[in-house]
Length: 406
Image 1 (cartoon, rainbow, N blue to C red):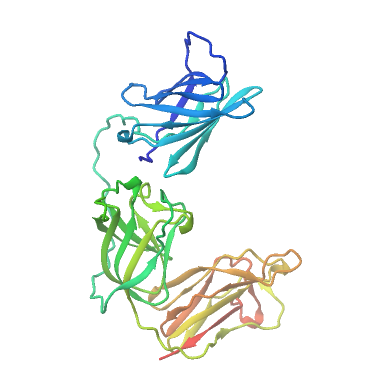
Image 2 (tube, rainbow, N blue to C red):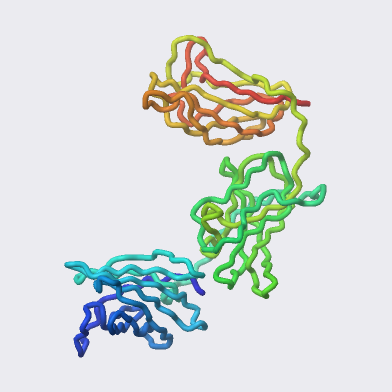
């Protein structure tokens, strides 16, 4: 069934020749659909038809026990490409309220409410969109690409990320699909799922957006089907490029057909394959930097907070102090500016040390990223509440720990 939507405005049809015995019976008409409802006892029946009359369906349902409302299903022919709809009409002292629900694969999807005698009904049914008025063709905007150099995989690819599951599928993810690489990796392929009611979708592009905002790609994709002969359910990008450890958001060029569900946390279904770099044998966790002290505290550091690693290390823990006169501060993000201008993070912090209804005074992240030897500057998203004092020489009070290795 199609899940494309077109706005539908229903108003009471004028010129009804014969009064109906029930206030919910009769003809309802609008630019996208016409309903003719009949009520006999507790049974509701009738027809639903597009304005041009080319596609007609049926309405079937029942009155509620109170007699002041009904539920019904609008069913279109199987070859029409239109999704069935479940609707509800309720009488109120001064209004008739209507709720519409799309009915895809047995799942109710709320779509709209609202009919008063002096207002139109707004509902959003599946179906073809109205034709777009012709416009003067314009040249498409130039597409900026940032395709990393292709490299050999260096081994047999394995699944680095997969969030597909066996639950019902709906389109249009509302939460970003984020892939975390604990170590550097060569990504072989990125695949997204475009079920789209079993019709698939013409393959588009896939890109990756790093935590610092850098966008890699987009890569053109090829389509892959399933054993039932349905085509282009999967979009596959051949990447074969090396990426540093960190977080990457998958960017799909057509979220309107990208599959998701609640089990995936409303994130787009995706699979990433590749070859992860060998795990470094790190030593015990030690303090890498600590400028804390017992002196009186002020806000807003006056100097950059900088530390140097003589050897590579896995950063396991980074914490900044936000005493802020005892009020604490809502946790933001922490990051590091490293050698060669590279930024690590930002990482969303969690708060600790809150008491008496105050906000946390400690911001903590656990990045678990590999840092090469070199000098790093700590970046805090809220320097106005970041603590400093004379004993820290005006630098923001910070703790860092990790595992140095060769």
